[in-house]
Amino acid sequence: MRVLFHLPLSPYSRKVRLAMAEKGIPFELRMERIWERRDAFLEMNPACTVPVLREENGLAVADSYAICEYLEEAYPDTGLFGRTLAERAEVRRLVAWFDGKFAAEVTSHLLYEKQLKRLLGRGNPDASAIRVGYANMRPHLEYLGWLAETRPWLAGPRISLADFAAAGHLSALDYIGDVDWSQNESAKQWYARMKSRPSFRALLAERVSGLEPPAHYDDPDF
Amino acid sequence: MRVLFHLPLSPYSRKVRLAMAEKGIPFELRMERIWERRDAFLEMNPACTVPVLREENGLAVADSYAICEYLEEAYPDTGLFGRTLAERAEVRRLVAWFDGKFAAEVTSHLLYEKQLKRLLGRGNPDASAIRVGYANMRPHLEYLGWLAETRPWLAGPRISLADFAAAGHLSALDYIGDVDWSQNESAKQWYARMKSRPSFRALLAERVSGLEPPAHYDDPDF
Image (tube, rainbow over all chains, first blue to last red; front, side):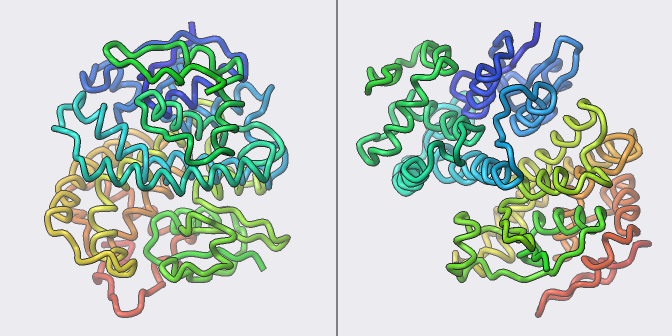
């Protein structure tokens, strides 16, 4: 069976899970405690990050960028990158926006400080970093809301990996109660549409041991 | 004319310049002072980063990941991503390694601290960050050297974007005199092969105003 090595709160794992569910590619989910630095895992991915996809033929694909481009080439039905060169450039620009800029300015200040830092044994959360994360989230929600208002989906006419990259980060942050959806109604409506998709069900049903999400987390009408 | 907006020491701009030169795609190079946040540039790339590629038909492609994938789709002759799915996964894993992990652990501690921070008006270099950058470079040069020893090129049998991503970072760091090539002979030999390629010439001939590179910078037999 195809295996996706993941962590439940990794935005990059979530992006890949959503993309695979949308494409209808079956897979088994296996949690990888990256802080244990398992030898067999390091062989597949020396960077020791999740997600890593292992195909039935043994091919290991490491890094969520490499996995998503691989999935698009290996399973081209239900394309998630757009049709024209211009659409594809816009999808990838926004994937880079969320996985690069949003990750550095928001996710790393909140999810890393509050959750991953402890697991990796790198000390206590830094309160000033957390404040920066909250402050940075507001303009990002505004930009996301503006995209959602002016286009059917974030990157254009079709749902794309840009939506799933954004949903990966926001759903993980929402799980730890860190998204104030009242800040932007259009962003909230876009996320409600995302949550209603069948591909989102497994994510919303999953629970991290010892950490309950807020009541609205799995409610599409939040 | 096709225009690439860039900064001379940006590793991501360098990767794209090398890729375009290898593919034989002509372009005009235009320096973009991103700290001036020019309106017309922000319209092409709200993230306000270089590189941005503007095609003759007006299409703007922002972010080096989006640009490289775009170039591969729009100009498929001289492919830089490998042939099989497995080769392509390995190329992209290593591009992510250099543009993500190496960038965060090495480049950001040296190039950002010493050069970009001042230009962006974010204060003085942090000496402890610079020490961390030097310390992190050693294991990275070892990994690069190991790849170069065990394969014809970094990602496998053919030269690929993985080599150009790595060369983008290392050539920018070499310009500011921050690479101690004596640390790894195989990494040095790989870089000598890279420097000898015609695609590298324009990079090595370029000078940043007020900042001279070390004497070995443009010498392929360094």
